[in-house]
Image 1: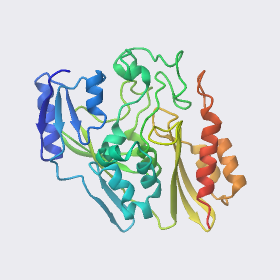
Image 2: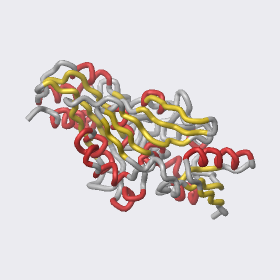
Image 3: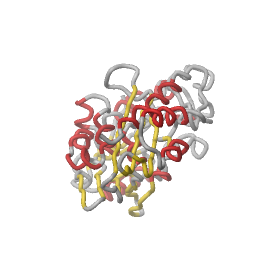
Image 4: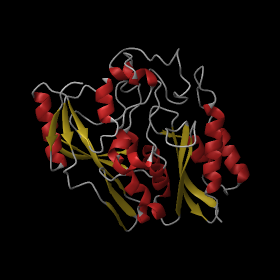
Length: 328
C-alpha cells in the first residue's frame, strides 16, 4: 500500500485550503470524516488519494438543531446520532429511519451524514478495477454484463445506482446542501446537488474541486408532515438497498395534500417519482390508492437484462410506504 500523508485540520475552511494546497503540489487529496469507505477504496486502488485531509478535529458540523419548523444538521453528525436524535425521529422520520438502516452499528457509529451522501458507487466493475466511466474510462461494463444490481431509471451512459439511504430522504424533504470550498461557502438545492451520468459520467454530485459537504438545512417542515423510509435488501440486514423509498406527505386528515416520493437503489441519483407525487395529491390514503401508486411508480422504468426483479420490488416498496402513512 502506498504511503499516505495525513493533514489534520480544525475547520472546514482549513480543510478546503489544505486540499487545494495538496493539489497545487501535484498531490490528490481526499477528505476523511468517518473514513469507513475511503481507506478501503485507497487500498483497492479505486481512489488515488495520497493526501488525507482529516476532519476528526473539526468542531463544527457535529450538531443537530431544530427551531420553529426548520432543521440544520451538520455533515459530521454520525449516522447513529442522526437515527437516534429525538427531534429527527419526531419531525424527520424518513431521515431517522434511513440512517438507522445503513450498514452495521459499528459503521453507523463512525460513518457521517456527509460521507453517506457523497460515497462512491458500489458497482462491482468499478470497485474491482475495471476502466469504466466511474474510473475515467469510456464504457459501462454492466450494460452487457452482470447488471442485477444496476439502474432501472436514469441510466446511461453509466448504469450505477446511488448507494446512499439517507440521500433520498434528504431530497424528499427538499434539503439544502451546505458546501465549503477554497473560495468560500455556498448552498445547493437537492435537485442540483446530484447529477446524472448524462451530465457527468464520472461523478455523482456537483461538488467542485476541493469542496466538501459540511451540512444540510431543511427549512420548512409543516406540522402535518408524515414520512417514512422503506428499504428492501437482498439479505436481512447490513447491506445496500435493492430498492428503497423515502416518502414525505403533507396530510390533512387522511388526505395527501402533497407528496414527495424518492427512490434509492434504482437510479444513478436519488430518483423522484413525480408521477406518483402528482397522483397522490388530494387522494385519501388507502390500500387501493397505495397499490395504484406502486403501479404508477414503475411505468417509466427501463430494466436491463438481469434486473427486472426490481420492478415488483419498487412497486411493492412504494405501496407499503404510502399505506404506512395513512392516518390512524
